Image (cartoon, rainbow, N blue to C red; front, side, top):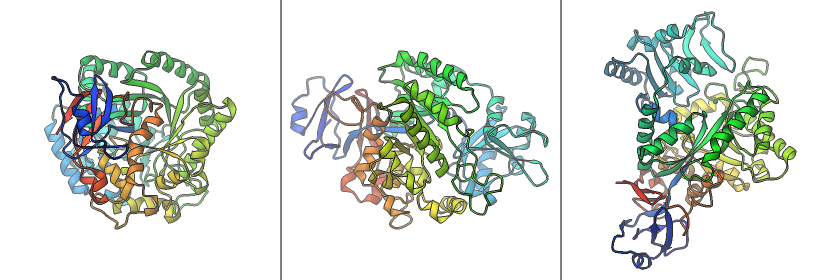
Amino acid sequence: MVNGRVWPGPPGRCGIAIAADRIVAVGTDDEIRGLAGPGTAMIDAAGGLIMPGFNDAHVHFLMGARNLRNLELSGETTVDGILKRVAGFAQAHNDRDWLLGRGWFYAVFPGGMPHRELLDRVVPDRPMAIEAYDSHTTWVNSAALARLGITDETADPPRGEIQRDGAGHATGILKEAAMELVEAALPRPTTAQDVESLAKAAQLAHRQGLTSVQDAGADLEQFELYAALRAAGDPMVRIRLGLLMQPGLSMVDWERRLVEYERLALPHRGDPWISTGIVKAFADGVIETGTAAMLAPYEGKRASDPGALGHPQWEPGELREAVRLADAAGCQVQIHAIGDAAVRTALDAYERAAATSGPRDRRHRVEHIETIDATDIPRFAALGVVASMQPYHADPEPAQLDLYTSMIGLDRASRGWPWGSIRRAGGRLAFGSDWPIVSFDPFLGLNAAVNRTTRDGRPAGGWLPAERLTLADALVAYTSGSAWAAHQERDRGTLEPGMLADVVVLDRDLFTIPAGDIVNASIRATIVGGALVYEK
């Protein structure tokens, strides 16, 4: 590969040479051409940036793959537009019993939530369930409520809510654990169906320059799925599979799950394609629905009001003990923590585990960090905890940003997605997308990280501009930072001899264009393990 700019590294490096699945040389065009033999394939980078493949540190890959068959609403910004898409999808899939989809935004609907009667207008005869874009709320129609057996007397499940109106009738909104009622009613896809969906998802990932992804919590059964995908011979992304930490288990049962996870993970020790070693917990929900755990009440609520501080997913002390056991077993831990109270809870659990078990190279992680108390920012560096963040979640589209700010107030919103502050305080960053929650297009994330603007440049100068990163720091967070967060920095994340040949070629050199044009860049070629898996 020649005629580009190799990043990271000193000026003058224009190309790389690959043999089998490893990089063997990095140098000038003449040096790289001098290594070519009669059968060598040559890729012309045409002046674009040659860089390590993007390593998405936070995805839900199987969930996203399965949803490729369903309705995607993330591009719709009006109620009429959503209903039109729903009606068209229902008409196009007359053979389906359940109609499924995802992607609607809270801010589209008056009051932040849709009602089942809206869905009933266009789908009155079959059950339909559509997850919100953040996958923390599901919107269902009346037929779905009937199929699920949800009546006015149905109790809320633990850690979930069946939303009701003033008269006690279900509105069609299921929050958090209540969403599992839908999942339990659906037939499970076959292994063949899942393998086909995963192969399609891998193709999409390659088009976006992703060579590695890290799944944020998976069932034990997923080991078999990814092994079957690999056996099928289709190009795939390198994936790291975690284990979901579930509240409500006894600690004895949690220890048993850790033992089973270790048994299934053991064959993948050293496997560059399917790796393991991490467990994931949800400490809270999301700010937009008032389920993120907060240190002070949501705006307009008193401390004595139900849900004033959000809805922690674990009982007091329960998460800390589960983390301690996972840490003692040698696992890395990642905790979904969006509200400032959840972030503190996660950091406290990690601090306690380290004090109990003693020093080791843990690299525990906090995922999302959508608001934080200022005193907790330096704790990431002090504790060696990775801030695993998804920049495009901070897209300051006015409707979304207004809802976020209205829930928690200007002061807490001023510490929204504080990657710049964490970086300046010495903390390590790992960037990802949370796909399918939002697109895994890394240029959307880079734009958010570097500019703090929407894709069309609003607001001028960026939202909370002090939190902007340099381009180099943002790229590090998407490559070597993500590799470090997965204990994989020895063979991915940089372009040096001996590293895995996971390489992407961009259609331009990001370091020579205006920052506002980053969002318009694209992938020219993606190489995984020395194999060309995508070419524009």
